[in-house]
Length: 185
Image (cartoon, rainbow, N blue to C red):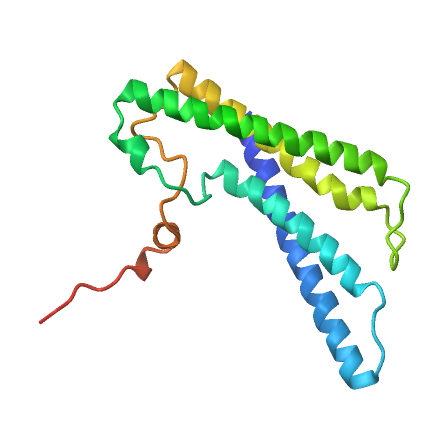
């Protein structure tokens, strides 16, 4: 099961890369066409906006799985294990509630705008609002999985990292060569 999930997230990362490449081609191509040939791609801005929205929401799902979102867990580290467990579960319950609001709102907006066409491309605006569903459903499953892990003891809240403390820590984790050299005198 883990291999299937890993493969799905690899697919998400490939989709994110493809969306980013599509944005670059559309925007750069439009700039070149406007300045060099006094023409342009009429749907470039609209597609770039939709690509960026999907890229952002899919990237948030990937970051959520990797616990890559920034946060502060200073209080959590100072609490006793039972208090930390309650704090983590409370935080995750609030995240479930917020994610449910995101899912229900996105679902409602998707249904409302399903038959509304975007002005330049004619694409259904349901695609625009569906990005919230593409984030919400996997995010809800990831949060529930973490909650079950904490409740069953599979995840130890005293040693688990649910967030990253800083962008520097995240960068160092991916590339240790970025560490500051020790001062030599």
